[in-house]
Structures are given as structure tokens and as C-alpha cells.
Image (tube, rainbow, N blue to C red; front, top):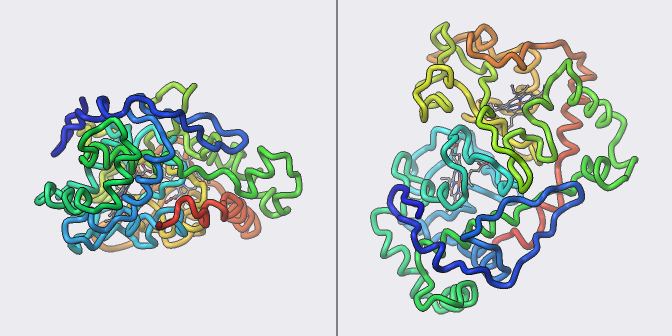
Length: 369
Ligand code: HEC
Ligand code: HEC
């Protein structure tokens, strides 16, 4: 049983005896993601999950769905600096994209304890710090809106045929998680070049950028490596490695490496001073459409991000967060700084653009019903 927060997910195991096996349509070069044994994929559950992902009746005041903050055309981000909840409360962090989220070994920007989508979902649904969907105060009434809808009664019955009363929070969460596990993106120009044998898929500038990205001079691939451009990926044959969070020298507000108090990274979870400012390297797939960047949305463009790496950390000149992240004693050794010509910087940014998979951004299977 997963007993976390407001709902104990005890029912999942009971309701999820494997139905007909559903085979994910994986791109060339992609390993199989880990699918929890107690929530196997089925076509009916995925389709139900898509409806629920875009269902505003699931928020307390019926204004927001998951899809309000996770928009497909922005690779399931929202274009805002930080997320904005259904009651108008700002989130401390930038909205994570959901590209290939099934492969993330941990979820959200900096939480080593959140390792499955079902558990993570309790935060946007029921969390009150900050309120996102705000379903907690009247959670029975919120669920009743769904249970009373004949169209949903049919979909839940199809997705969970063994249950007499299939509309529960467990099944709702299980279906949305199943839908998210299908959000797989692997058809970018980079993929056609690297995995599909199309030597002409990348332009000369993108190719030069690729060489820079994988060079020891820039070090990008050490943290944004592998098929998903994040070392923080897990799949059927991988071994979990907890040392995946890094301080990239974005802040040093006290001369000892401190980050702003509302965004201290893994430190907020563990309390270990060594974890100050350590965040998960996000996947860089579709990164060209997910501006603004970084855990707090503090970089508006990819060029701004690249210039931070060039400098070996960020100088915040004034204001409450003033300080030079490049001097932080907690900064990763993989962010030493390096020099780029303007042309090289353009190449690197062009390469990042080659990770955009337009088919994913427009795929009707992922769109609002
Ligand atoms: C108010 C905007 C908002 C809403 C509504 C929202 N999210 Fe999010 N989501 C966020 C933010 C902000 C983060 C980053 C949280 C953090 O790092 O603490 C996030 C992170 C996530 C992640 C982690 C992805 C990763 O890369 O690790 C998942 C999964 C997710 N949300 C799923 C959902 C689902 C499912 C729903 C609906 C039940 C939902 N979200 C509703 C704002 C939102
Ligand atoms: C030491 C590991 C590490 C190295 C090396 C590294 N990154 Fe990152 N990268 C991260 C982490 C961690 C974050 C998130 C930082 C944060 O928000 O606090 C990040 C964030 C980013 C982002 C923002 C993505 C988003 O969705 O907001 C981009 C773009 C990026 N890195 C590109 C690069 C490039 C290009 C290089 C090489 C020049 C590089 N990274 C090198 C760990 C690394």
C-alpha cells in the first residue's frame, strides 16, 4: 500500500489485475519504461486517463485540469515563469514538461523520494502548499462530479471491468498515470539522425552543435546524457543511482552556496547541507518550446542558459538573490566554465532545437478530447 498524504492507494493492486497487454509504441533506440505491476497499461485506461488529464471538474473550483499547466504544444509546460494554481496561488517552481515522463527516475525538480507518477499526482490534486488543483477540501464532492457523469461511468467500467464501483481516486490516478506513460517523444531530427539512419536529418550547424554538446570541453552530456538527455532516467534494464542531482551554480546568496530560501533543491527534502541547490537535470527533449527555463523559470531563453554554463555559474548582480554562483563552494565540478565563439553558441542552440519532435507536440492521441 502506498500511504501518502491524503489518500491511501490501497485499492490499486486490487483493481489492476492485468487486462489485455498493451504494447507501447516505442521509437527506435528507446528502452522499455518501467510500468508498475499494480497499474498495467490498457488502451481503455489510457483513453480514460486522457479525458481525466484534461478534466477541469477535477479541481476544487472546476477551473483547472492537469492540462491547464501542462500544455501539449509547449511539451506539457505552460510558458510561465512559475506555475499558477487554480486559486491563483503561485508555485515556487517552473512547470516540468511531461515529455517521456515515464522514464524519469524521480519526479519534479528536486525530490528524490517521488519515484512514481501515482504518488506524485497527490501533490497537484490534493496539495495545499501551494494549492494547484485544490481537490482536497471537498474530495468526495469532486469525485462525485465524475461518478455522476454517465459518459465517465462508461469509460471507467471499460477501463476497470472487474470493479463494481470503479470511480475512485485510485482508479482516477491510475488512469491519468497510464495516459502520461504514453507521452513518448522520439521523432525529432536528432532521432532521425542518431537512431533512424537518416544522415541528412541534421543541418551543418546542428551537427556542429552536436559535437560541442558531446565534447569534454562543454560536459553537457555527463548530466544530460542517454536517449532521454537526462542521466536521471530509469528503464527496464537500468540501475537506480541516487547521485543524480546537481548544483549548477545558479545562486550563492550567502557566500557559502545558499540558494533562495523557497528553492533550495534536494536540501529541502533531506536537510543535508551538501544537497543545497541540487536539482535534477531535466530532459532536454523539446527544450526549444519549454521556455522559460530552470527550476524557478529565471532564464528566459536558451541563450541565457548557455551563457550561464559558459561563465561557470550565474552572477546575480543585485536584489535579494545577489551573489556569484560561479564562486559557490557547492557547485558541481562539471560546470567549470568554458569559452564559446558566437558561432559556436548558435550551433549549440541549433542542436538543442533539433531535439524538437513536432509530431509529439501535435499528436492527436495526446490532445484534449
Ligand atoms: C498549477 C499548475 C499545475 C497543475 C494544475 C498541475 N501541475 Fe504538474 N507540475 C506543476 C509544477 C509547478 C511542477 C513542478 C513541481 C516541483 O518541481 O515542485 C509540476 C510537475 C509535474 C510532474 C513531474 C514531471 C517531471 O518531470 O518529473 C508531473 C508528472 C505532473 N506535474 C503531473 C501533473 C498531473 C497528472 C496533474 C493533474 C492531476 C498536474 N500535474 C497538474 C504544475 C502543475
Ligand atoms: C553538472 C550537471 C550538468 C551539466 C554538466 C550540464 N547541465 Fe544543464 N542542467 C543541469 C541541471 C541540474 C539543470 C536544472 C538546474 C536548475 O534549474 O537548478 C539543468 C538545466 C539545463 C537547461 C534548462 C532546461 C529546462 O527545462 O529548464 C538547459 C537548456 C541545459 N541545462 C542545457 C545544458 C547544456 C547545453 C549543457 C552543456 C553546456 C549543460 N546543460 C550542462 C545539469 C547539468
